[in-house]
Length: 387
Ligand SMILES: *Cc1c(COP(=O)(O)O)cnc(C)c1O
Image 1 (cartoon, protein in one colour):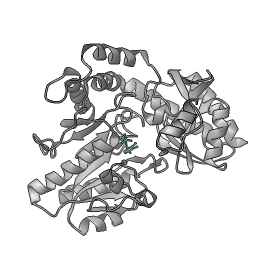
Image 2: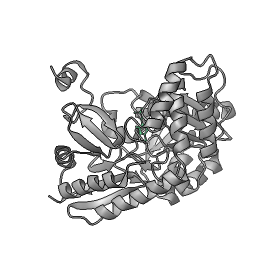
Image 3: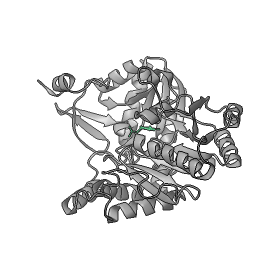
């Protein structure tokens, strides 16, 4: 049996996979098992921010793996300390909890929000408001937080206390907050899985104000849109708000599993010894990868992200077969006249990898994708969409 056949036979069928067995890559070019080359505009869902097998990233990973691959959190390790300090410097947050995925980063945020309210106000103030169309993960609590009915089938009973408000509807948010018992509001600045839908900054600022007035925590899920993807380190920075808790993952270690929950001034001391933990969390190899990635996401790189994002939008907006373009920086959604599955399949035929989000084509290229490769990719995409 080949890779696809063995996978389909032995791996639980939770993914609707594209019929493509990837073997290796260099930067923004990937190769399948037959050696066919693809331009990669997906980065493994916004993960490989410096592309495949990037030399600096590889060096950081290999050096740490050769020293000590894991220690557990009984002990101190330098890569973890460095990464935490770096993230706080980039974000203005105060402390960090490391985990292994976006879902875990959000679980931690949910637990911390509940403990903050429980410490300060006693029991009963455990409600968490999220947005319709959101995606926060696949564990039971983060699935409950995810505001998509279709994902809630079959898995109940759910974690109590979650409610959902339409995105960009500030009066609905105020009404939900005024029902009381709420400890936090959680939102993505750009809904990724929900179809690359940015929130209005006026809404984000309004929510921040409503939360502040009520001592309700603002939790911002930057798992997908964070780490330079939108042209600022975190997407909330476009709106000039300072969240109480920020979560991130995907790009954080550039291709190794790592999640982080960042705490602000109000929440930095909420989780004390024994209140939360993770065996692998902040693993030294992942953390060394993280230090290498995060320290390279600087102003110059992000200026390039903004510029390349504008380039993509200019090429696509109004092009034949394109109905709408959304997103910011190198996180872009394209509504096409053609069915998105047909676009993905036709692009694959022609050596281009793109993703989908709901009914849109989703582009999440490496932040350092060379301009000539990006141009070739967009050439193919516009031709496929126009056909
Ligand atoms: C991908 C994603 C998650 C879940 O991350 P995992 O690493 O798959 O657990 C959570 N929130 C957002 C916004 C995401 O895009």
